[in-house]
Length: 255
Image 1: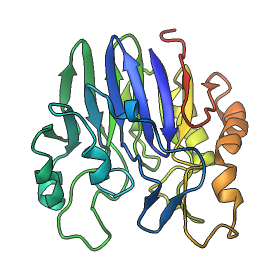
Image 2: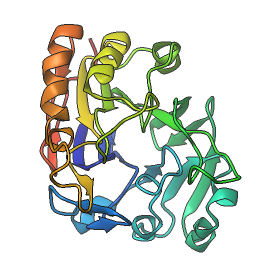
Image 3: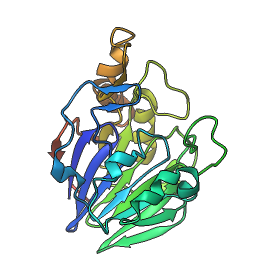
């Protein structure tokens, strides 16, 4: 199996001949956010057998990026997403499936199991319609957990089960993170609890608010390296793969 990090929470997970894409965002600019590091993903990054969308926030469910997917691509979104984000109806050429924790979808020989996340699942903070924030466990040759965007919660390890690889958010796009997110320290604690063979830090070092380049720049640049340091102490048995944008890794599966 192979993992490619394209930036932010966008990754390609290839397992057993199946190509899965997480939270695709291909834009140079997203509202008040500007891509400050890494070129936008190349065209072939949009090629996938299925796409996993963890929650409705626009930096995870990005309609223009989803519109680049080929007709017939399976699109897994949180239950209630179509009601909350009417623009999804314009993507009728995709095979859209609403899912919630406890669901499982087969994509060829791979099983995608839906697990909960601790995060605000609404499109905006004042939105009327709610949808659950999700994580996904991909089981094929390896067991890979895509956490989406989440804080720590007590049942996290029980929900995911044994893991080979964990894709863990370690930062964000602004100079402050609430407890419904993982920063580097909380992500290292998540690595300790989950005890995967390998971890890949994501959701950092890509987008940053326009005009805030000089405001706490370490919050943009350092979360990946900080996670490496903290995980070495909290979860020394977990091998951390710190990727550059567009870089791939083949973590060892199974233990």
